Length: 189
Image (cartoon, rainbow, N blue to C red; front, side, top):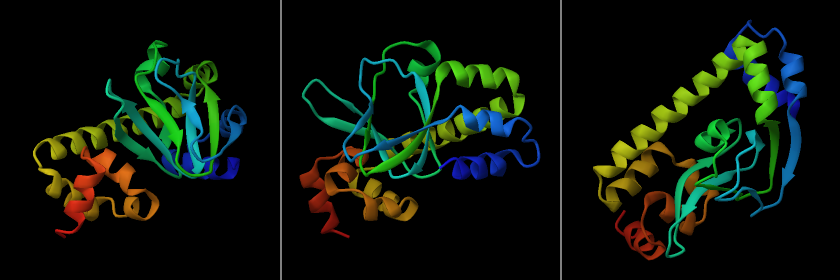
């Protein structure tokens, strides 16, 4: 598992990988079963995760018990609840594996220490945050201006792999529509 993380970091940093072996040594492997939680609303996000294989759903639950999916995190992507991780305040989100998954976790304390000791690690973290932010803002701005059918078409054009890995219920949650609406819209395509 650690080789995949090493390759990922090397792809982000190029030749500036001094201390890489030490950084990687702080990541602890975890195996998740399907539907296992990494984080629940109200808990503190005490780790940053790198997904080696599998998939994790990031979602909230409203007062009526409805799930709204913010994102799906797949192989070679990073996962943390930023506000909770940085500020050590209760999480507003849930992280749940939607497939059997292999994950590498680094504690907040080690993450912060390594970011200070190895500036290139902090640089990579900043790149990851910037990309995540840009993708989130793009998706929010795009979805706000679209009706449900347009969001479905956007997803088909921009994220087709989601259709092969997710249930209809999860796709509907990601699109911000009911499962029944999703089924009806699929018939219009």
